[in-house]
Structure formats: structure tokens, C-alpha cells
Length: 391
Image (cartoon, rainbow, N blue to C red; front, side, top):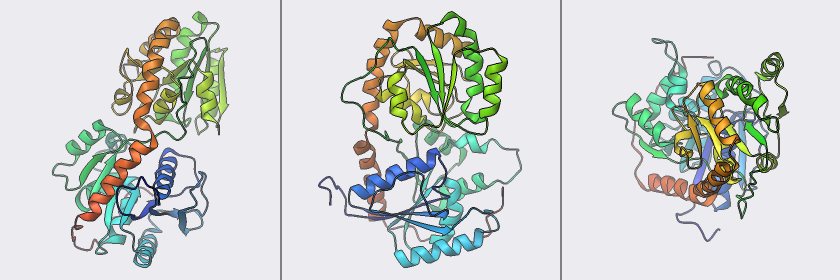
């Protein structure tokens, strides 16, 4: 047992769709589960499908899968609820954490009446999923409403998202807790940044919400004026072919598509500037990772995430969300001044200290321990037929 334990050991079960895909929720779940296991807690991750994990697991983390392969949420709904309920009856966890609030549509009925603490963990932001055609009942809206009513707590990643939850669900019953993600790798002992590095780095899933098309448009406005600089995009996804075609069609000469990487620290260490062009974010994990390596950032000021991590003019530059001309001007300002980059680098490196694992896991322990000490509300059993929505 770790000497750093501040609460009695808990039996904690995380429920997630799968760990067989590379995603932010999957990575965050394994990081928190591993850290809690390392501090002496009994930890299980229950997946709806898939018996393997793309991310390393602590020896003390047990992985249990309800199904070997993916299937329809709606068609498997009742079987999954019953499977989860049987598992929780047999293993009696103290706390069940639904990793992604939509999975709480399964967790809530599966744990009804069992006296366990239920926590919904939001990895996106409230508005990202809620911006759907009006009048259409969708899975995420229903999940969030029910989680706010029947769970003991909801964990969100930013203060702004907590505000959105309060505005979006009046009279929320659940305790709303802000716990950010933490660094997935050690922060270097000293700031490794060098302002003579001439790579603009951007990383993430190559999908529409990440806005790499906007980054390429902005880069096209500055590339010819900075012949010593290059843009490196790290990641893979459904937009890869379209983005490469966009760069080719625009005649961009110094854009590298590096693909998915298993060594992001090496990319951060080789860069001189980080650029985040997302249309929306849940948190902005790449920002704290790049800050650990002292990278100043130029970022869209999208509604949730960047403004809580980047202080304009201090450790980076924030520009109007979606404005590619403003993004290009931010890049131009930073790229043209090594003195500005060096100054912002020091503050960026300092900012990353807030996201050390031990600091964040202490918040998780305090939350889960305090919830367990309270008597869980005794709700009426919930009818399992709230699986309406998207397939």
C-alpha cells in the first residue's frame, strides 16, 4: 500500500465502451485507473466490448469485457444492462464511474438499488454533443439529464464546462466536480525548449472537430514568409486523405503528415511552437503535453478548453475561434520573434506543473472517498427502456 494513501482503499469500477480504440477517453481512463491502482485501490475496467487494451494497464487493474466484439448499442442494450448488473452484484464495487456520460444509460439501471456510488465522467464538453437537431431525443441528451438526476457526481474537465452543465440542466442534483486530465508522461526536470527550433507542431485525431483543415488554410497564409519553418501534423483519422489533398492542392511545400506516433515527447522536444486549431475541445490535452516541454501555443479560443490552459500573451496566444486569418496572424507573431517565444516558453513550462499525476489523483481520491462516506441516495429502480436515440 502506498504511503500516499489519504483515504481507505476503495473498490472502483470504470465502465467504458472499449479500450481497443485509440481515443482521448480511453487514454484518460487507463491513466486514472492505473494511478488509482498504484495507490492501493482495487480497480476494474469493464468494457462493453473488446478484451484487449490499446493502452498499458497497471498489474493491479483488472479488465473485464461484456462482449468480445462491437455491436449495436440499442440491440445489445438490455443484455448489457443485465451483464453489468450481474457483474456488480458479484464484485460489489464501492464506486462505479461511467467513462463518457452516454455509458451512464447502462450504468444507472445496472446499479439501481445496489447502494453503490455512481459517477459520470464527461470527456467532451456539454455543447459539443448537444448541438443536434431540435426535437430529436438523442442518447447524449438523455444520458446527461439522467446522470444529473440519479448519479452522485459528475466529473467535468474544465470550469467552463461545469458552467455549461449548470445552465443546460437546471436544478442539477449530482455534485459537479472539476478534475482536469493529467500529464501522461513525466515533465522534464528542466525546461528543454530552444527558440531556434523551427517546427510548428499540431497533433490529434484527423477529424473535423480538430480543425486541421483550418490550420492548413492558416499555414498557407504564412508559409512563404517563413521559409525556415515547417508544419508537422501528428495523428491519423478519417480526414487524413482529404487533408493531404488540401495541402497538395494549395501548393504547400513544408507540411509533414507524420501519422500516429507512439513517442509524442520526441515531437514536442523537436518543435518550436504548438498550434491548436480545434473547432471544439473537451479539454485540450495536447496543450498541457506541449507545455510540459515548454512550447508556447497559438490556439483558437474555442468555447471550452484553451482559455483555461493558455493565458494570452503570457504562455501563448489565443485567437478568435474559427478565424483562419487571425490564426495565421498569431502564428506570424510567434514565429517572427524568438524573444517572445522564449519568454512564453518559461511560463508555459511552469503552467504544466499543475497537471502532475499526483495532484490530480489526489482530487479523484478525495471525491470518491467523500462520496463513499456519504449514504448514496436510494432512488427508485429505473426502467431500462431509455436506450432510444442513435444506434
